[in-house]
Each structure stands twice: as structure tokens, then as C-alpha cells.
Amino acid sequence: MQALHNLNLGSLLDTLFSVSAAFALGGLIGLERQWRQRTAGLRTNALVAVASAVFVDMAQRLGGNDAAVHVVAYVVSGVGFLGAGAIMKEGANVIGLNTAATLWGSAAVGACAGADLLGEAVVAALFVLASNTLLRPVVNRINRRPVQEEASEATYAVYVVCERSCQAEVHERLIELLEEASYPVRSVDQHPFGQNDAEIEATLYATAVVPEQLDEVMARLEAVPGVVQAFWNASAEE
Image 1: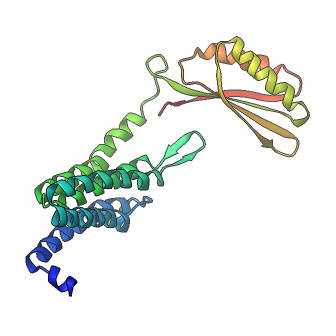
Image 2 (image 1 turned 60 degrees about the vertical axis):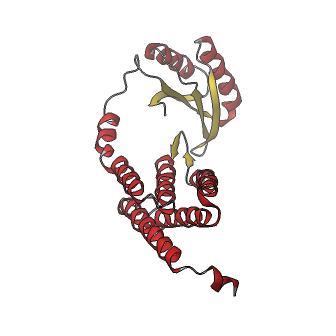
Image 3 (image 1 turned 30 degrees about the vertical axis):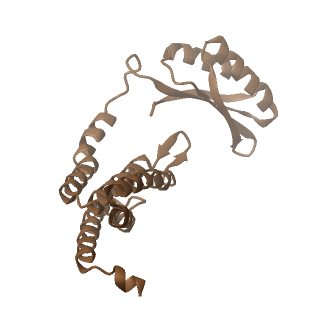
């Protein structure tokens, strides 16, 4: 009977309108993600927006604006944990940051809708969509530009292919030569390379280097007994 007592047609229609707006706007954000075949697509973004709207609307109905503000804070932190699950590291690259940020945007849209700020919800959704569409050509254009090593930092990795029987000695010599050249090593990874060789990958701390100096280190490494090949490359620091 308590459920029937709490049934209020006006409040129910208000909730329906708010949740419907969150569903439509979250779905619009997710549609763009689904079209580009991203991890969090149509359903995920719609659900995040709807759930945020329901939590905020319920808090506002039960405890007023102060309670809704408290719930919004929990929505922000909760979706932060959800977004963290979409972030993955593949080698030296981190992927999923944009997906996590988009989920946060969908939650913000849903929270606005749940708080009956439908105009703000529409504005937020439009800016999330603009960030994922209008800014994409700008990002691609910037990424196609060559890295100016003198004006930006980069992550440098040194690769040495050597015989497995000499792996320990080559590893020590690699660290020694890099330290002599004042290039500290952040991490070292070793794995088999073919049937008889091994590859040692040393990642340097982000810095600007003199290519000729690293070339000289590579030449000295290739002179070490057991070394088959030594080379290095650079990638833009994220």
C-alpha cells in the first residue's frame, strides 16, 4: 500500500520526461561511438545517461536539491571507476581514454536531465558530440605532423637483438653505455626473438636526445660479441 501511496502521476510524468531525454541524448552520443565501432557504444552510453538521470531524479524527489547535489557527486566518482575499466595499456600506448571521457560526458548529460535541467543536458550532449566529431579532423591533422624533437619531448626505446647465451652480458653493457651517454633507462623488457636469439627493449625517460649520440651508442652495442642488431626509435610522449 505504501507504493500506491507514493504514486504521484505528476512526479511520474516528470521522471518519465527526464529519463526519456537522458535516453535520447545518451543514445545520440552512443550512436556516434557505435558508428565508429568503439568499445562503449550505443547501449553503454544510453544506460549511463539513463542511470544517472534516475539516481539524480530520485534523490531530488526524496530529499530535494541538496540530496540531488550529493548524488551527483557520487555519480561523478562512480562513472570515473566505470571509465577506468575502459582504459587499457598496449605496450607503450594507452587506449580507451576517449571512451572513458565520453562515458563521463554521458553521465553529465543524464545528471542534468535528472535534475530537470533539460536545456543544459542538450547543450552538454552537443558539446560531447562536437568533441568526438568536429575535433577529430583537427587531431588527425596534428598527429600527421612530424615530431619536432627540439620543441617537444618524446619517448625513446632502444632495441638490441642478441644471442640468448650472451643475453645477460649484453643487458649489462646496454645499461652501461646508455648511462655513459646520460640517458637513464626507465624500464627494460626482454623476450625471445626467433629460435636462438633474444630481444632486449630499453625504454628511456621522456627527454630530448641528440640522434647522433644514440647512433654512436648503437654502433658500440653492435660491436659487443653476440649482438646481432641494435637500433632505436622515438614516439611522441602522451
